[in-house]
Image (cartoon, rainbow, N blue to C red; front, side, top):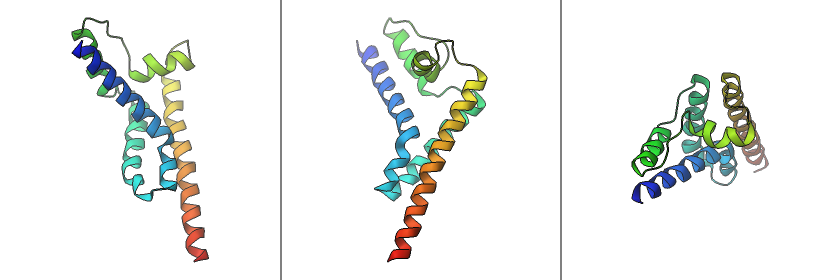
Length: 125
């Protein structure tokens, strides 16, 4: 039972990290200091996708599931939980690169907008 709980906690943390990477740039509109946490997270996520690496949380979750008597799964977190919802055919190398580029483009646009707002607000004061 404890392994099952641990696996689900890791799953929630992992999902929270993915959401933070994709949408966390919006937090800098309110708290600029969050960029210090968000930028490394974006870089890490993009490196994982571009290089085809598996996040260390995935083997931890799988180990906890197997230790708790459940089945593990092959592939990574994104492939198992997210891609199966978005792309039923499965994860390919091209899709991984697209996902990595998507993360960079979305966050780049958010950061450019924030820089623009910061510069225009300083100009008006």
